[in-house]
Amino acid sequence: MDLKLNAINFRAPKCPSFALPAAVSLRSPRFLMASTLRSGSKEVETVKKPFTPPREVHVQVTHSMPPQKIEIFKAMEDWAEDNILVHLKPVEKSWQPQDFLPDPASDGFHDQVKELRERAREIPDDYFVVLVGDMITEEALPTYQTMLNTLDGVRDETGASATSWAVWTRAWTAEENRHGDLLNKYLYLSGRVDMRQIEKTIQYLIGSGMDPRTENSPYLGFIYTSFQERATFISHGNTARLAREHGDMKLAQICGTIASDEKRHETAYTKIVEKLFEIDPDGTVLAFADMMRKKISMPAHLMYDGRDDNLFDHFSSVAQRLGVYTAKDYADILEHLVGRWKVENLTGLSSEGQKAQDYVCGLPPRIRRLEERAQGRAKQGPRIPFSWIYDREVQL
Amino acid sequence: MASFSASAGSFSAVPCALKQNQVPNLRKASLSFSGKAFPSYKMPALRFRVSCAAKPETVNKVVEIVKKQLALPDDRDVNGESKFSTLGADSLDTVEIVMGLEEEFGISVEEESAQSITTVQEAADLIEKLLEK
Image 1 (tube, helix red, strand yellow):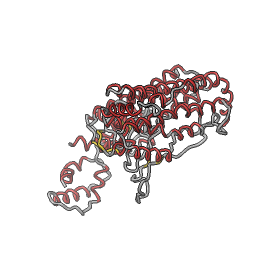
Image 2 (cartoon, rainbow over the protein chains, first blue to last red):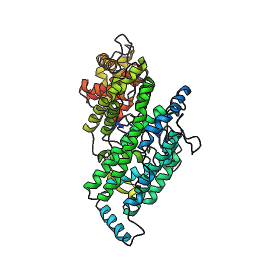
Image 3 (tube, rainbow over the protein chains, first blue to last red):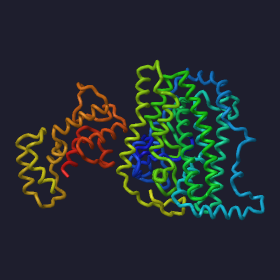
């Protein structure tokens, strides 16, 4: 995100799609879609090269934060050590993917795999499309670590920097890394999906990267990650719930465990932004409005499987229809953050800051209204094939 | 071709920059073409008609709704040629303007049509087209 209205034109660092698909979302406002250039689009040369993944269309802006503000983040390092790093879990106390998967060293391994596959058989294709999309998003982790390291003032300068920010980024990456690994192994063992197509999609996606338009600004960056972590918490929470409904308690546990990590990360990122609102309310509210005007784009919006030029749109439509992640969630997250950061109560703002405050506070009901309208006219979507499930068809 | 003959009647009511002597020519032409298919024939005046089709009341209503949505002062000059983006509308504003027009005129605008609207005139023309149905 898209609310086709898309979110994002209108879209955690790893977050399942926001239904802001461009061409296809029948049930969500188009406005939220982040704009991307497809290989067949008229904005490119008419000669269509085969196997061209989508790319970002917007002009990529860099270093929009005034360099003086870098000081703020240096000065925050001690505070970050005491207040942010505490949200990391020590490795010795952390879960590992193996805790949730059949144990290859055990005699019961084959039976455990058999049971896993039996449970997976009861789960419909449309759920798997969404789970696969989520897994692909998680597996594009290199892009997100990169994105965090583009931020001025907080980047890991050497790859082993001792600053609290760098310690956080590496440890965050390490925690997130387990998510993709766990989902990958589960999907591999399930037998329900085409791993090769999925792997290809991941290779394309990491190759494409993404530009969330955070412009090297940690203000924009941490607002973006706050939004995304909450979105991903909601999304994994929903896949957990649906897994339970389909009778797979182990899968429900997997998704639920991932969701709880995301919640911890959301707490950390929102705390950073809360501190920024304290230190520099004007700059932070301007940043918040800026991100929302640009719309929060989904990390995997450039996904491509070599076949479907509108893969992300199709995936997000299914996620919207299943209620895993919807345009309504986008509005809810925004409203939550406005409350969490007490944006309404900010005082001493410049006139630009006040405009930004009004914009952000007034935005959730506007998005909800758009979403209601889109739902009201939602036609039933077509059934389209997904290469991730051997071209079996799923209703959009 | 059906739209051709239908337009002949409404021509005189259209406040365009068409000169008086052009109008009777068009009427004559449309009479002789009615019911026949001339796919390759181009009538330059037809383009005139399309761009001047909307009634002034429609255009004014659109201007009112646009000014309200974008919180523009009453004395700000907004007319048919005004582009939404120049007036400061973002994509969300544009959709909300379309929603406002739907409510005002009791019409329903398709997603694809909504996206092609960039000026006040285009909005007014689309409204009239939908009202004709």
